Amino acid sequence: MAAYNFHRKIFEDPNNSTDPTDSCFFQCDQEKNPTGNCLSICSLLCPTYCNDTDSSPPPPPPLSHHSSLSLPLKISLVILILTFSFFLLYTLYKFYTVWYRSRRRRPPPPPSPENQETHDEFLDQDVLDHPIWSHTNCPLCRAGIVKNESSNLDDLRQTEEITHVAVSITDESNGEERRTEDDNRSSELIIGVADEEADKGNNEFLNMRRSVSLNDYAACRVRSDVYNNKNYYSDRHDYHTWFVCWCIFYPSYHNLHASQVLHVVPTLATCVDPLKMNSVKALAESPDLNHIPSIYAYSVNSTEPPASDLQDAIPTIDFSLLTSADPDLRSKTIQELDMACKDWGFFQVINHGVPEALMNMVIEKSAEFFDLTDDEKNEFEDKGVLDPIRYGTSFNTKKDGILYWRDFLKVIIHPEFHSPNKPLGFREVLLEYSKKTREVVKGLVSGISTSLGLDQAYVEKALKLESSLQILVVNLYPPCPQPELAMGLPPHSDHGLLTLLINNGVSGLQIKHKGKWVNVNNDLPNSFLVNTADQLQIFSNGKYKSVEHRAIVNNAVTRLSVAMANGPSPDTAVEPAYKLVTEERCKPEYHPMKYEEYVAMQQSNKLDGKTCLDKVRV
Ligand SMILES: O=C(O)CCC(=O)C(=O)O
Ligand SMILES: [Fe+2]
Image (cartoon, rainbow, N blue to C red; front, side):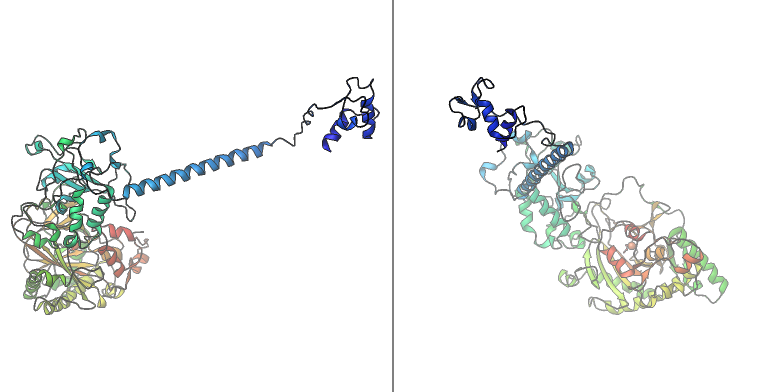
């Protein structure tokens, strides 16, 4: 119909006829239409003249601006196409990466003669994705695994019993993909190989080769074993062999050659099987221990100068004067206490009223506890930070990374009293010691309350000290064959208000004084070493700072220390003293936090300077 109308227009009578038959007659007229070409419909009308039908294609439709796409529509269309393409590409990419990763996580195929390492054509390949070649199934034990934060290869090498291989777990991804999902540690392993020349002093450790020799799966296993598995020592033998099954070690990064593949040698072949150790005491007592397993290798901050001996004497507080009826004597002692807390965070307390015999018994019974059999001690094995009695090693093996040369026993002795039932008499000694030390703390706290410009009983009441949380911490530091490479307890501040420390007469404590580490020797008999701790820093709004300290070890004798941590009541939300903040018109520098939560936070993390305090800082 449209075509008809259209043709009609072309042949339209100039007289504007509207009848279609008019138009046909027009075409049938020889004069008007000399070609004789008519519309097919017209040839019906005049068949004699219209000998041909019009077969010419209809002329193109007249141009209309409505039929072309408008500019905004075109733009939208382009955007739509681009978006769709991008989406398609992204999906493909995602799919590829997921598939690629899952492929890399798959355990490697079992070793077979064909995939034994025999050629070096893999040099130009993506080594991370290269199949793992099996090697002899000789055990590489845990001693070969260290967390080497400093990457100080010299230190690392010294800690190894062998010269052939060292394996370390690193936190650094150094640009390579991190592969852990559950936390931010990298599962990458670094393999370091010392060649024969290293022993002759000509060469350092050769270049470290990362993640090549161990496949991803092995790396993950090692990571989770070292960091997460509490029973690692006792029951991880499967990993032990598994690990080495998939190891191959290259002597050089740049000059790989099959013939240079070294054999993995047990790192502690002459010592003990470290997988069986659950205390540093057991390790230290093993015969022929000449080197520490590298899991104990501690990297000191190389920018810090070594600790020095004290130039000035640690302040001494005569407790009997603090509680004296003579107001002058008391106020003079309070001033000394104020200076000690401000300038040192550490002081000795004499004439405190705790019988010397009792203090000696605490040391004696504590030592006896560590002499119990493994089975007896393991009854109190550390099961979690809220456990009232916890026996363990290092600080928090789940988080430490490396291990500290220390075994410990922690007992909550107030507000609820707990005690191991062995050794005989330990319980009674601890109960008495708890009572006596709380009296000392009460006296010191009332002096501190006054020195802060508060009422004598202000701190005691505000922090509910009648229900104070008192935790006894016994630290055992056995002799260490390489004391310069190990650490008893790393730098930290204590969580409570005041810690009362005694030891068995062996020194090893260092405190940070005016920015430098200094040795603390207990030269006063029958005295307590007292240090200010985090809750005091919070409550005094930073006027008194908790002091950082650490414990080093020696190669001659066992050191034993007993730290009595005294804090507020567990349910007290500690914050800067209201009176201090309002009267001195200063802003509180710390957020409130329940003391028990603070303790749990400190104990469940890595012991690391004053990082816990930083978490409640405003
Ligand atoms: O062993 C020492 O002297 C220090 C112990 C210590 O700092 C602690 O148990 O918190
Ligand atoms: Fe401490």
